[in-house]
Amino acid sequence: MSSLVSSQTEDFIDWWQHAVFYQIYPRSFKDSNGDGIGDLQGIISKLPYLAETGITATWLSPIFQSPMVDFGYDISDYRAIQPEYGSRADFDQLVHKASSLGIKIILDFVPNHSSDQHEWFKKSVARDPIYENFYVWADGKKDELGVRQPPNNWQSVFYGSAWEWNEQRQQYYLHQFTKEQPDLNYRNPAVVQAMDEVLLFWLNKGVAGFRIDAVNHLFEREDLADEPLSGKTADPLSYEYTKHVHTKDLPEVLAMVQHWRQLLDDYSAKHPDGVTRIMMTEAYADLHVLMDYYETADGVRGSQMPFNFHFITDVDCDSDARDFVYNVEKWLIYMPRGHAANWVMGNHDNPRVASRFGSASVDAMNMLLLTLPGIAVTYNGEELGMEDYREISWEDTVDPPARNAGKKDYKKVSRDPERTPFQWSNASNADFSTAAKTWLPVNPNYLVLNLAAQQEAARSHYKVYKALIELRKLPTLRRGRFSIEPLSRAVFALKRTLKDYETIVTIINVSAKEQLINLTDFINGPHKLIVEVAGVESTYNPGDFLFMASSQKSDKNWQLQLSPFAGLVLSHGPAGMSAQRRLLLKQIIKSFNVVLVALLMYNLWRHKWTKVNFN
Ligand code: GLC
Image (cartoon, rainbow, N blue to C red; front, side):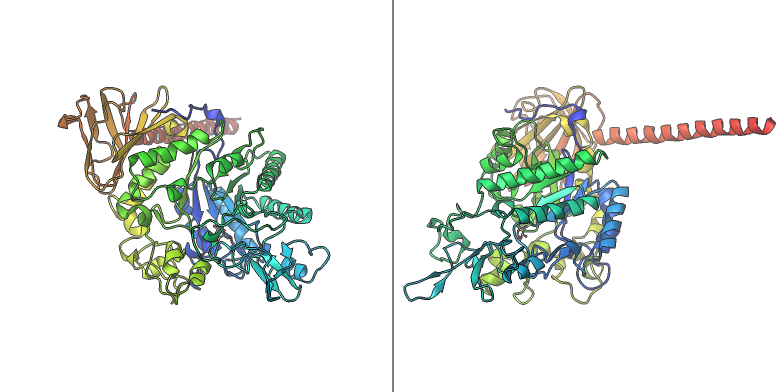
């Protein structure tokens, strides 16, 4: 058994180190004006929902002016709000309201590329001396027949050559994503400066940090050498055709991340409001590379949160308990000391949890996410167990890589299924919008799978999610030691311990069969266990007592029963009362104290007033 996270004192925990970050995909969250597209006023109207759920901060996918080729990841003005989403005044209102509810706002920063409609690109095409080298331009090559060809064999992530010919400038420009997303040239200090100003602009508007998009694509090899073939496919236009050794994860990326870290740290230091401004970086990369984002061997710090996508990329519905344990431990083993782990369960680029692991796994995956040490990242809708809507027709399909793949293959790559509108209730369009047609169709399962139904039900995925966030307030989950191990191929358990506090144990069955589990060995001896959180289908209820006294594996009296893909969160130790109840009791005592103090003050004031009148 490993014990990888040493307990920290409360003083060491900054606001983000144990936060629950909630990703909002603005286009699909809530439409306030009936145009079928989500917007800022829609988000503002749902901030109380986030607060009630217990979210620390919300990361908004891009809300900036954009022709929407890649739905906001193609920005034509980094400082303007996309008009269909609202205005700067709406944004100010959003930050203000969020702050009054104790929620921090994180913005998506898309540095690798702008839109081809950005002024900078237009001026670069026109060879305006200031902007001439803002993008990556190159002459083409001539083939044997004298026909012009792109400078090398690099492909776009979204299929096809990464080079597009520009007639006006008579050169190719690089685009690692769609051709409408030209790559900015970070070897030009003026680009670095311009992007620093963008960051400062939004920091001054009160954001707590940034999610940095596609960061490992920022630099390419300067001599534009061909990339070696991967041998994975014969299609030279597929992104899989080459190994991306010259276009991804270049060492220069780290220097840029460190530069932005410095900018954020300087900003935080100059604004003594106590809020550390943070960055979370998006890179699907090798573990060693990701760890350097945290901190390089020479001790230079970069990203506070290099996204840990391993629950998305490295485990699936066929993984067994050992795979899950290995998946968790590898991050913690490699992570440099003094940093916070982060766990990402889903996002707008990948199938949803219910569709990757199966809908029966929703509660268990949230139990795992929210009881692991460090930061939890939830994609909107995962708290309800929303499912991908895979039946979107070709005609309704809008995602660029899906359109590039064509009618026959679009479903294999489309990201539209996980981006469908949020399912608020069983009202028309799931109460997302009053429009006749929404930008992406609503998943028809909204009639049964929606927030309102889950708020009303005695048991629901949402209630489990909320109970887990409540439980995270416990000192044990905030800063307790951690260990995890497979109990069999089907079941794994993780434990959080903190001196003088209750121990929290999460057990998860990742198999399709019911499992009987004896926990005596794992929890070290006989114990009275209390159920803290049980899934929707569980036979246990929060508050139930379970007695573990025998280590005889076959002794049926001491076995827990876990249904297929179910999880359970238990506690044991000194309180002898469920942690949930203890928290409630604390709250009651606190409110009681507030009333007492108020009464006392009132009496003092009355006394003084009376005295004044007597004189
Ligand atoms: C990131 C985004 C994705 C986008 C791409 C290009 O991977 O998450 O949605 O298409 O960058 O900006």
